[in-house]
View 1: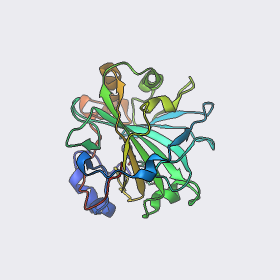
View 2: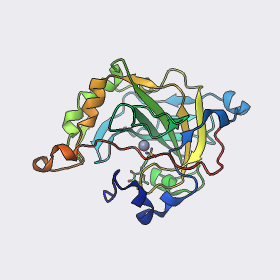
View 3: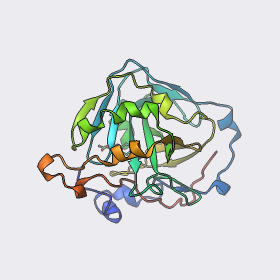
Length: 261
Ligand code: BO1
Ligand code: ZN
């Protein structure tokens, strides 16, 4: 699964056929064509997070991934057809501050994007099974744009242990309770939603996407700490060129899909 990277984006489809599909993510969200949906707005999201669950951070060679499995971390509401269980979040970034997000808004990108990944625990037996579905109801992924600005206190709990996972395949733990909801924007009622895919191989078209309109902030110092992660697991091989310098897929064609707001 490490047989792909971000310098051969156009080759993904040769090994992972789903990447050639018509319902891929990310997309450029053209705000003028997003359709207002009355029923979405009458059904607010209800996110729950288990503050006491064990939180692990892993450098998987593509990003840092934060997971904390708990039966009580879940979400309902918004466009979701069922209850979904939290599995992990991770981040995407770019070569410079003007790039990094996977979704674009009217052609503009942001410094980064955090993805909160959930699976439909009413219809599927496990994350793995849900992630194989091709009916877009397996996973729910929430995208939060990151812009540079104020230091992010909650994100500091991750940044302060990030050096423990500088090398690929290393894991560490967040000792202080992480309030994951504090990494979301304040306003959870402003979002776009559409049917899409995993943005990394195998690019399965299993996801209902929700991209929040309001970004969160972090400082440039915090972003630099993330950009120092390596995609290499051998310290002696970790040269400057082995840093995870960018990990965002380019926007895919909408192919007639509807974007609701
Ligand atoms: S994302 O949020 O669309 N960037 C995303 C991308 C990939 C995954 C989750 C969210 N997870 C992947 C795992 C693979 C696994 C695949 C299907 O899900 O990283 O190891 O094969 O289960
Ligand atoms: Zn992602």
